[in-house]
Image 1 (cartoon, rainbow, N blue to C red):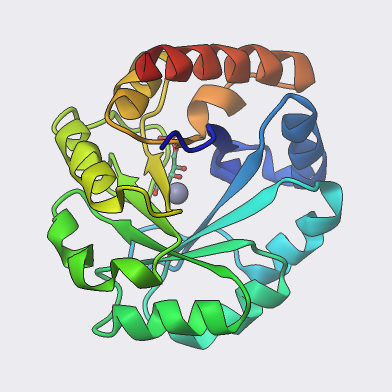
Image 2: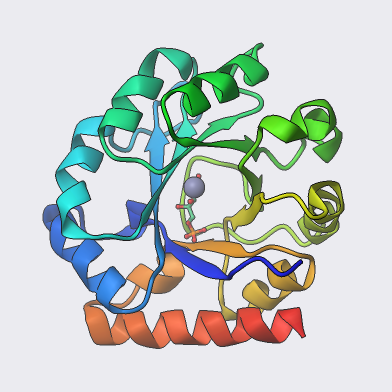
Length: 225
Ligand code: DX5
Ligand code: ZN
């Protein structure tokens, strides 16, 4: 089964002084998803933004809001991210002792439930709960910062996730160090959603964003062939 390809710009690398415009521009440039990196300075060594910023951005685009929670605990905040207009809410498998409960809580809020895995966490952590997952996010860098290098060994892990997913309607997302060079590695292994922060937002404005998104997409499509 070929899942539709989506490019998901991470606004972590955008200009925070004009985030609404950035979201509008990157959507106009062809992004299907917007990736929202939430960091708490506790689960990861960096702080970004929270649900009130996401809520303020919701009117600027119809794109899928893909929320990546790098926070611990996550459960007390799930409702706030659902209310903010997130479509996918992804928690880290390492963020708490009761991953399955978090996934159930996300679905109970009417949202799609995602699990993110740090580089060291094996795919086998998901085997017994795969029926309760709508998205698997494979970290191809250590979470916390944009602009890091894609870890090459992660391509084998993406392929393992793809095997586990089989025909199930589960998105397979890769996050970290995605460039025109690594996009094809990720899709060759089976990924269908590619997060890109610094690669896209190193430019400025719709024309720059469109060029990079088009290049990422053609590399990603090559990887699928
Ligand atoms: C890292 C974040 C990523 C990051 C990607 O913790 O989850 O989404 O912003 O940034 P780049 O594309 O620059 O690696
Ligand atoms: Zn992310």
